[in-house]
Length: 399
Image (cartoon, rainbow, N blue to C red):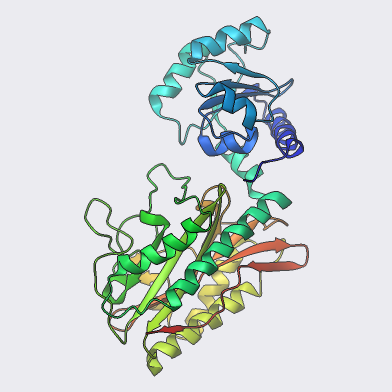
């Protein structure tokens, strides 16, 4: 089991405090589980109070003993309510004045909870802290980079199982189960985490074949699959796979809290010339965009470079979707969540930084022919990039 080292937690806290001072925020009250884990080292139910000046306090809501074992925060108190938190802060002279600003993850924390915070802390001066937190989480430590590498190893194991799957006559969800089984039996967490409040994904990924690969359904993706029911209308379905079809696997795998997110396309049986040509054109786009990745380049520059290439090869109408269901992006960041900032799209004007990790996931979707997709995770290095993961850029033929 991986444990976040004390020095790393303390470094994150110090970095957050500096950002609070720069933004004139008295303290931040962190409640979102992934952010709690990032700053405390514990995923137990708690609230983390981090003042701009002074030491942080982790208020445990339950599992107090385990929280103390997990966390690097020296001061851990039991507090089941905001009232108990406020009482303790007053006792240690850490309670904010009514004019002070408190940072809260207002894009995620429910309205009723924010209302209780305002009532308990006698203030309406609440600032959204999410931008500050996500910008800090964007740059990965060596520990975090290794965790994402470990997750990518599980993707390779799943891929190897798919190559041996004998897919003809099987359902999409049966192949999905192979990927999920390999990840789980090799130590995967068995779920993926989203930043968006309505994010969920069956089994952690997408398996989409034939018409299911060019029908856009569910949340913010392009190759989505249609799922098993209208209740969760994306992911693998009960469609039966046949020879001559292509099937896309787009899977996030989480291991010890950190995600990889990769995609490959498989041909059931030998690919025909049109399928192979489409795949080669996709890889051409993918590698040309990857070649531009380096510190200082913006996500918007990568996105528009991809558009320029697909226009030249005459496939713009099938890039990242079809007709009205097209996505204005070609990737995103990953880490503790699978959909971290920035989205690699037309509005991503911040330059890429060393030790951030992004995905690039171009795809072509041509009705009747099929969809092809490739996705790689890229570590931004001082001189360019490193691809995390070992699966090649082939149209893998399985039968």
